[in-house]
Image 1: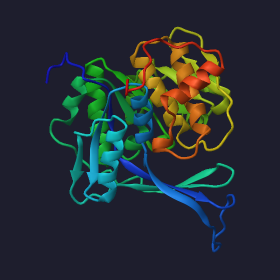
Image 2: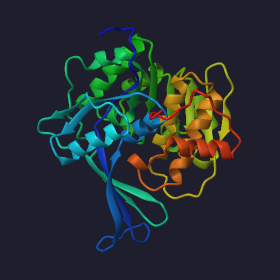
Image 3: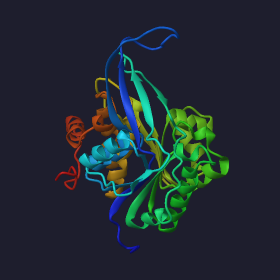
Image 4: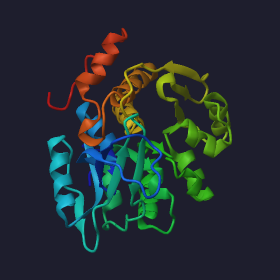
Amino acid sequence: MDKDKKTYDILVLTASTVDMIIEMEGTFPVEGGCTRRIKASHPEPGGEGNLMIVCSRMGGKILPVGPLGNDPYGSWLIEAYREQGIETAYLKTAENYQTPVANCIIDENGTHSFISTIDSSMFVGWEKTTELMDICKGFYLCGYHLSDSKQPFCSLSMNLLRRASRLKREVFFDPGPLCRKIEPDILEEALKSATVIALNHEEAEALTGCADPAAASEILRRRTDALLLLKAGARGCYASSVGGEGRWYPGFRVPLVDTMGAGDSFLGAFVYAWLQKWDLATCVAWANAAGAAKTAKLGTGTQVPTFDEIVAILKKNGYNFPDTARPFSQ
């Protein structure tokens, strides 16, 4: 491949998942032996699909790489991604593999719970998978794929990470809720190699033992030179970079409907903005707006924010944005 040709903004190694959105009557907890009525249910692209759709809707060129099952869910995901302007050439049907399905149960308070398969990523890729990094500006590194070092997705993720580092590409690392399960040497390499690390307060506390975002950021700073983005919901985001003082970027208040996918929406918007080389304040404002817009909607996948919904929140709060910002359809 021509190493100077960068066709895509971001490469995403993904075990493409279908989220089955289930709206439950009543509220959690659900006691054993009881029966609850389902108010509505429908499928949506899940997992990394949330990040990819937000980034694509902002104008990003996304290259997902990974397996699909030779089943109706796999075929459905391909069409869903294409409708969102996402490349599907490197999503390959894998033998003896079923497309993962996550049951996403949402109660009437907007609280959600997942019942899903998280260890079915048995895809080992093909010989030239890591070379795809050559035609991408950045790489999204997912902590889920690092949580079991025996899984092929872990070694493939690390190979992509090392190639991205050699090529001086941007690396966006999302440690995720299973970050405690990542082996120490793998975690340290990911932290040291990342350009941007985005995590919520629970994940930051898991890595540092500190619940305060600013204090956790100072502890993480000893382990990485990456830009640290500590997400704090409606409060906003605490960002810390090497050589600069950390600061809070305020969030945007919206009527709360469902928080599921808000973190993915935040990072999808940030990835696009960062790769456009916008200033940090603008990047975080877009990300905070995307996260807020998602919490005002129910579900994942195609229910993540649109370009216009993100812009509406920014305009309502008096923010300007670059003239280069355009949705993918334009």
